[in-house]
Image 1 (cartoon, rainbow, N blue to C red):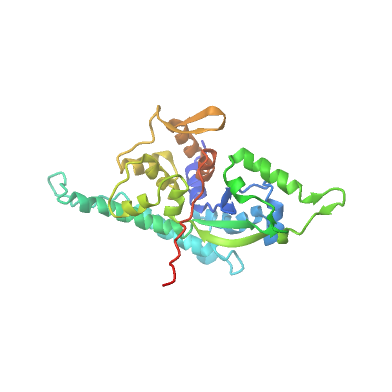
Image 2 (spheres, rainbow, N blue to C red):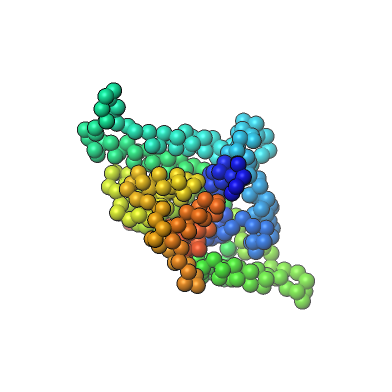
Length: 311
């Protein structure tokens, strides 16, 4: 953190992030991940290789080591589109706090229409969230039924904390290999599939944090939720890179994350994360998805639309 370019690297890391999911459950990008070898067998490259192909070029673009137009045609299919979407996002973010009130030459500006003034900021944030969704993608893998049963129980996995998930996945994948016969008990392609890329919508992201998706719809219409978590998780979704910048964002809505006393959440073992701890983690570059995972929150919960009955 003491290095001169740390803040730039952290910002690039935040913006280039692309979560990997298994049946919609967030998993980390780590060569020790028990899924890594299986993903390679199903999709071709491993999680680590996919990360280097689809995420690291975006990171390089963020720290200005390369430009989208310089990328070869045989590079990742989605990198160039993500970089272009990212540039649009950065342009929108640059104007987020610009005061829309007219400034007189000799007086402090007065706001004639408070609602109209508020909606200028909300419209900017709404556009920012829409831009974010265009490059906030998941790379999803799914467990398939084998002999009528899934190798991975998705619902069971979804309700576990981080350490339980690791133990469950490791034990399950260990059972795939039969040491007596020195081979796998079945083909991985019979058990797992790759479902491609999928955008994460802000409404689904908030719902995964226990925040009713309707709050987002109301917000876009000018109704400000009285739930502080709404603004913090919205800042996480927008991948605002530092605690000072998140403070500025929540200040815009009348809140603060700089309290040395208030509790952010409880985690396993009876430990408590205060907002001062959260700020340290944010500034150290800890993945927002990992922070939420530690607090038992989900990456997203998709909206289930009711099917219209035939008339």
